[in-house]
Amino acid sequence: MSGKIAFFDFDGTITTKDTMLEFLRFYSGSKVYYRNMAKLLPSLLRMKAGFITNHVAKEAMLTLFLGGKSEEEVIAAGKEFAAQKLPSLIRPGAMKKIAELRSRGAEIVIVTASSDYWVAPWCVANKTELIATKLETKNGIITGRLHGSNCHGQEKVRRIEERYRLQSFEEISCFGDTRGDLPMLSIAHHRYYKPFRD
Image (cartoon, rainbow, N blue to C red; front, top):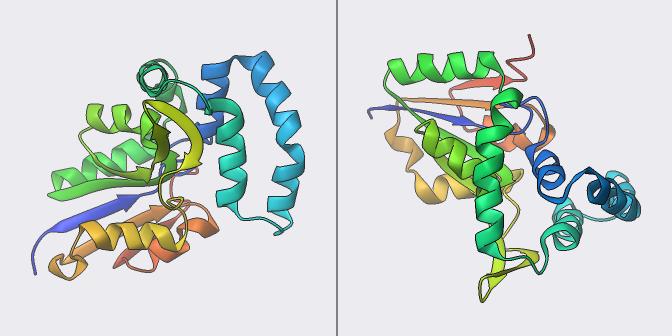
């Protein structure tokens, strides 16, 4: 075995807020955002109560906000969001840990339920790999449905194992902040839960 790798959840671990919600408000404007969130309240309450999955609730949200939108337009908005808004949401402690791990030769991988539309530009700028939720498109138009499964819970582990042969790493570190990250934390030699809340 050789090499080190570190898997980081993004929303709430590296950032101080849920970036999907922040991106949707950035993209749609506050007035439309709050109007749409009011429409989604019944679905969100049903998810909290366990009557529907986060996959179903997420698709309802994405369909309302992004369904029918041009993928090209949303990708451009994601780049603007990553440049203009994301820097103020990043936890300094997380960036310090990423720099420390990288100095020790570790590969850094972001594993997030958020979309690559707004997380990928940040990853490119910060030279990290990315495993993210994908959105379905048809003829360049976003449908609002997910392409495959939501990258949450056990799906994070499945997606990691799909890309990496974990047995080949001598040191695996994982960072998360919610119950949805616990399966990912279970694969690590070194696991950190809510590590940057200082």
